[in-house]
Image (cartoon, rainbow, N blue to C red):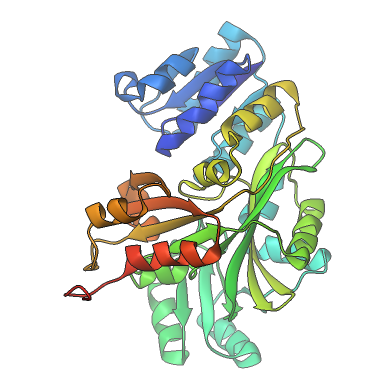
Length: 391
């Protein structure tokens, strides 16, 4: 099997996907703009061949790279990056080289929030009221219908980039005065805890792996207000969440793909759909899958792709958490104190790439615990701010 992996060096832990593709027997072909000698040594060893382009955003260069690989190795079987930014590029390349997976025709449903809303409604899942607003007068009509606050976000945006809360007409006017040319969707603000439905589906859309994460706040607030973030995996999926999540898998093109579907929990068993992402959850969450269940999700994905192995026995043994630190905060406890107090429960500590730091902080801690009380204690200790230590 010939697999092209776009930008295999980013995020930094994604080299493991290439590594496991090689172990599963695939020919792994990398395309990126980074010098080969600067790649992680383990990544270099995993690649059968590497094609460096000047710019990943130059589609003609990517076409030539894929054409070169096709001429040398034969038909390409898979093209992926597992990165939301490259979804449209992957789809276009799959169109041009007749490769299995999401095509350009699938992009509106998995990239445009207005189209996602239609799919959620088709599945009978509540959504926030709202739509794309094309002008200030149109937005004011919508505001009169659903009221403030509104959330404005790019219809085809990535994550919470350029997403804003608008509390009144003055802020709405200011937003439209500076709004980029792209389409924006305006929605009513939903009060609730963000909880995700995450996993990996096989070629029939059946989950091979399932989990869920609970977030301290939305990424919009994290980015716009400079907050630190925490989130954690659950050991038992709420029945109501699993029910709406499985409905989503039926109406979205989730085939041999990771998925990250976000909901607001608005009541004891009530969920309002936020958005769907056809890739693994962000940051180092794939590592959290592994720590929570003592599995290797990189291997599981590779064997699904190469061997169509869709069987995985797993147990959510631990609560696994992530807590970030922001440079704009003065923390009470030092890194050394955190390690000294929770060393046996810490799984991983990462410096976060600058392009991800507005959401994930400059430093991220991953840890696991048997009980929720202990997990929350670790989060509080990492996030505690102040000028003097308690006696």
